[in-house]
Image 1 (tube, helix red, strand yellow):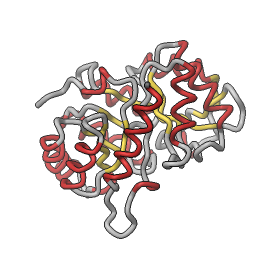
Image 2 (cartoon, rainbow, N blue to C red; image 1 turned 90 degrees about the vertical axis):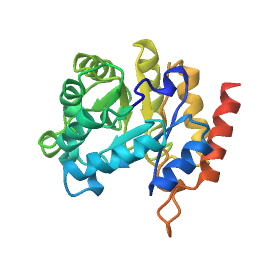
Image 3 (cartoon, helix red, strand yellow; image 1 turned 45 degrees about the vertical axis):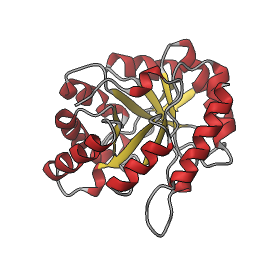
Image 4 (cartoon, rainbow, N blue to C red; image 1 turned 180 degrees about the horizontal axis):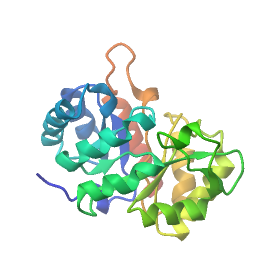
Amino acid sequence: MKLTPNYYQDRVCLNVLAGSKQNAQQVYEAAQGHVLVGVLSKNYPDVESAISDMRSYAALIDNALSIGLGAGDPKQSMMVSLIAQQVQPQHVNQVFTGVATSRALLGQSETVVNGLVSPTGRVGWVKISTGPLSAQAPDGIVPVETAIALLKDMGGSSIKYFPMGGLKHKDEYQYVAQACAEYDFMLEPTGGIDLDNFEPLLEIALRAGVKQVIPHIYSSIIDPESGHTRPEDVKTLLEITKKLLG
């Protein structure tokens, strides 16, 4: 199975959810391959069933698979790592404290592993206490630069900045983008992104000079009746991306 990600050549790679295997194929085609297709570990009763089903997904989309937690749920952290070990996807979503475990179990450095950090309401600072126990403890808040260094120490590839609330934390997000650019780190803006705010959010990251951006666009482009991501909305996101990249 192919491991080397398509998006290593991409400055921007979309990240959207799939409601079914057919939907995964639809959004992959709509994005012309410039996408990671999220499948949530939380939707499975155990690791074994998740591994079997996610392998089927991966086979349909050239392994452009993103293993998700499910709304950043820290309780899914170990399950995600165990699935990733066997499936070897292109992308893994992790809470901050789960990054090292995922990287060690993957046994290679090609898969992108993000680490979830959250806005604090204070420019230049992020919350890293997003793990199963730390999320229940007093907030662990550190400078953005320290968070990036810690993630690099653990084998992480990118900051997953969540929950952003769209443009609610614009100034903080701008600082995070500049830090990711300065320290040669990927950025994954997540939370409240829709067809209206996608362009300004992506533009901030690109203007800051972030080497690779993986924006997560979830509920806003999911049809509420079918639970499927709308391929036409993915096409729109791709058109916006191409316009910004010139």
